Image 1 (cartoon, rainbow, N blue to C red):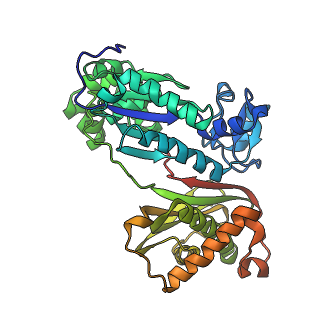
Image 2: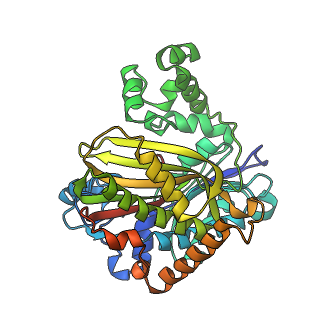
Image 3: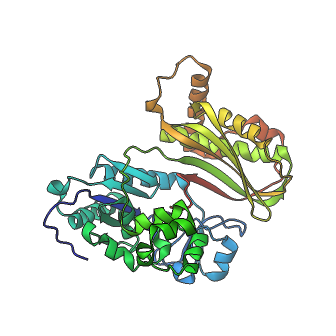
Length: 412
């Protein structure tokens, strides 16, 4: 791939993706974990793997795999429970680094973002030089974490390029070479082509992106509907979407996988309350308000059920989030039992984007109280303060693992 450019590109877009982020942070903080296969997730077999270190990946272990299966495939792996507050702190550092390179940074999750570098070549040099400087800056700011970077003239090609030489990779794809570069890659690299779609493409005789590019739009439309036209455009390296700076995180959530399946509504509500407390605390720490709340239940046969509601007023108040969750619980018609209970807050906005809060309103006083509780939890641990409901009723469904997430995106 050529790295010399006689003229600046019409657009220069970088996609930066931290390498095995959660696992890398744990290995950074604990030198004893370096070089070892580690799995981030609950120690219980009922949970799922959040991230596997690169040392574990030769055993065919990956994210979202049931922990029981992962431990069978990689019996020597070290299981490390996630520390989301730590990951959030490191993510802030990384995003601050990105912001020094471009005013337009579109964070997709805690560990990846698009940067619009158009016009910055005079400041940072050619695209390859931009990539090297970006990688060096992240490593220096985090104490040694690596990031893989892809640069091209579209978001799609830049994202594919960032994963091309992982880990710690740098791939530059000039726009005039993008279509040919994509052609040899498998259709699994098409944005939006999940396993079922890949199987359909294979059935049609389309195994590479070049095969899709050679097919006619009419054929793809007839066989795949509008998705076929989308894939055709991507296969031709066409993606007009702009980098959207200051993009708010899509969601903050907390899910609990239980050691014992439950179906009792009061017991489910207790877990919803714990999730609401975690979500409210993280919203306030992030300086965000949520316009939406969702509840997720997973049955014993792994069927995921969700209900959600849009709020008339954005909030970061635990009690408000919980109240909506408790109401949403009534909308589920499945009797259970359930192995997972969770909530999420979505459609996030910065608290600075809202009008100044009434300092004498009930919500403002509640926020002050919950902020004080946050401070106590930060100093002495999350169990230092208990709500009355927690003290009155013993919990029957012990937790196997807690999955708190920010910017939850299954494709990230």
